[in-house]
Length: 117
Image (cartoon, rainbow, N blue to C red; front, side, top):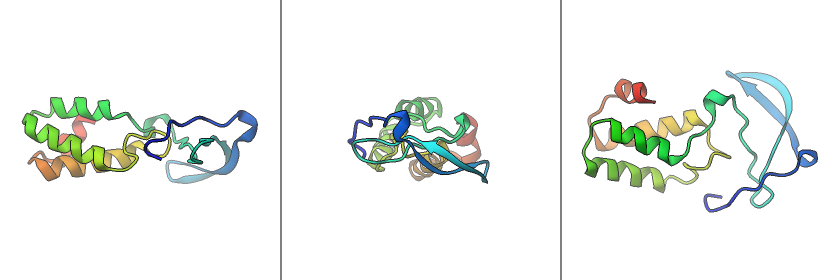
């Protein structure tokens, strides 16, 4: 899936699946999916939509850590399957993985990292 160039199905082909907002079930809504790999697109609220890798790379640059640490963290994130896939990943999942990677290679506190997110 990580190497798939997602192509959205048409409006008529959407599948009806459960939808949650802020942890509460909101019934069924139509979801798009990729016609190549079949991954269903995450239709979370805008605040929980996944970001591209560049967003997190820019945060690393502002954290005040060394270039070596930035490189190690970036490589760690690149190794995570589908981290950069906005189709199947949510922002909250990405943020958790990002925080874990930053804490692994630096001594930056979690609340400081969250302030940059």
